[in-house]
Length: 332
Image (cartoon, rainbow, N blue to C red):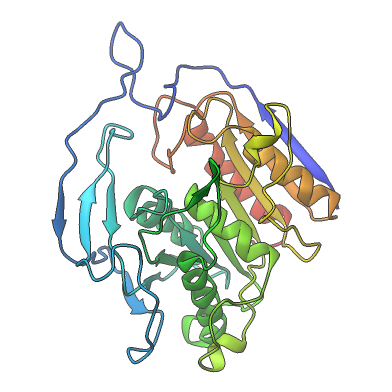
């Protein structure tokens, strides 16, 4: 067990927040586009099968938007010269299953998009990640979890919600994947989770506890909700910023367990949304607990880049590092 940090101070030009194509004769553009949102339930494309997480007769706690109808929209700025899209006001969470292309390795990946707990970034950090996953012989399940959920503040300090709806949905999804492993053609001991930003925070929680905050409802909930391996990309909300700039102390609600799975952490040094000390603090805590952890830090990339190629080398390099890491831990 060990802690491996590859600090990749890659060259090239990148934006301060999200990598963009480099216009001729000038610095990279961070192109803002109008945000457009409309009422409607997000539906998958490209062969995915969307399945509900919970039985229809189970009453779920509602997001902070109450009964607001689900909507879809596009985010801003562009990433890789293209729009990215979200689902919002999600009251009935789902996972969308994508089957592997070519030889089935038996492995599976639960994808948890980000969105600041306000929405779910369905393509940039969802279906596009599943495209990569299935191309490498794995089953992919993209989670659409309940949002929005406001994080309260007390005396100027951020607090964690007592019950995190997205975590309940993530744990339920992982348990369902194990329960239905034979139906999906997957090895129940090779199911990992990859999360981005807010989704990365959910993966951290899944990794370190198997306890549920909801009443178990069926046989699926008797399955473990802890992933067998974890990928944490530009994580948020784990560092206690009140301890000073040089502190690497975790928030009191972040509990690290020696039972956490092997973990790969991806982050850009110039992430203006979530400081690089966020993943560093978590990586050190995992290492102290004896959990195998690899961390890849890149000079540029900003925040919310997913796997879309941009002018920042991180976007074309980290998928290869992910593949090698999966090989190293015996998934491939």
